[in-house]
Length: 613
Image 1 (spheres, helix red, strand yellow):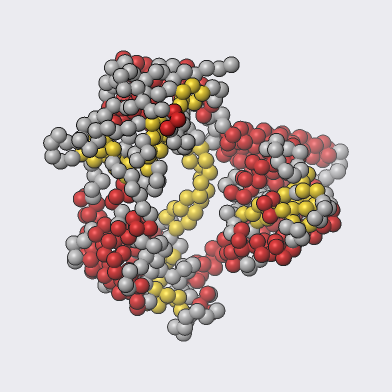
Image 2: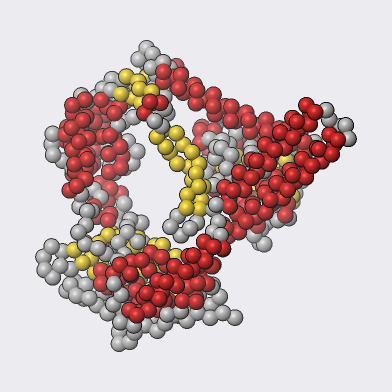
């Protein structure tokens, strides 16, 4: 999302009584967008200029725009669904309680430069929602809009390709193509001068002597000192308090991911690699059958890499030995467990957000506990991200969670309603809207092709002109069909939904024999939990957990005997004493009713009741 604080001074400079445009005009939204973080935050162009143009047309036509009604993005590329600002705006103008019925923008390409269907879909959605769209520079006709949109789109594609080719040529000439200097290096120009205009284009690496000491220490500690990454992070954090060169380059404390990435980087043995990675937007399907478009980084074939020689900080032997020991240390990692746990990696700490993991005491009676994995971070990290959540006995949490799930399993028809509801949420409905719009556009292209043929028969075109126009229509229709297929892959078909429901029924039937005794095999419990629960938010200190997923509910629990090392029963809580943030109730999976229940010391928990009107 764009840095709103960057362009707020520009808004305030234009504003009168806290609004831009006509202070006495009709309320309106504003949407502004640039293509990169740099444009948004460095002020090279974009957002302030767009605000000026929006202010100009709002004054002329009588609209007033408050700061709260300005939405902004710095998202590059053609996609519109993943822009935080636009997503929030779309949710706002679809709301029946919205404040404005107008939206002001500079050009239509601020919505999207993809003129084939994105622009039309977003405009159609706004008008269908009763929102009137106003542009600072409107187009005189639909033809002009389509032509200018295609020109803008192709211009951006060409600009991206020119940048890629320029980056390759820069690397082939022996220069560095990194956007920011790596830890231990600094940017210089061809004459060795730092912080010059030439260094932005004629970029080379020179060693940062203060940081290079830390780099050598890191490699020698892993290669020859026998240190693990965890031990090394603690030492680096301690030395960083008195030696600035040892401080983490991107955070207040070192973390394992950045340290491992540094050690594996061949840059430090004198080899900078350009053109190694590229990004591509793909559709991924999660374990629940939902699909989403994500931007992923891929590695190119090694023959396409461009190697640039730079000054090395460590010799190749030290680099190779450090990497060999780094790989060897994985086999001794403390996370490699010999025991299985029902909720490990599903439970998440309500304080710090880290996952809970299981641990079994080596001494008898081999008590098992879940603990927040933040305890394995370095003291330096914990100093800046404190977490005081204690561990909890596995049998206490496992029993409490299984009580809730077992009660839900007693009413499988409700679970089937929950599966239906889960795959019919707002996101899926939005995709269906897009599919409907695309179907209409595809049908229009088929009609247009038929009309072109009739015009050709009537002599309006010669053969060459007709062939060119027909190829244009076919290309546009193929593009729309491709988008239609991509979106269709993101929603669950009736057959897939039926298969998902069948899986729920099968698991319920397999568990029925064990529910009364609460002695279902651990593997079966794990499968059921992972099918019905995405995440468990756990607060051991306050004594509550919250299930999130197909089953959404909260529970209170206490641990009377945790210190003694024995399981404690769940204790009845007075509703008046419950924390406000914990809902000790089971929400109807059909979202129609909520029926409260509590777990008593001397009785089994009553089954959650789900009712519909």
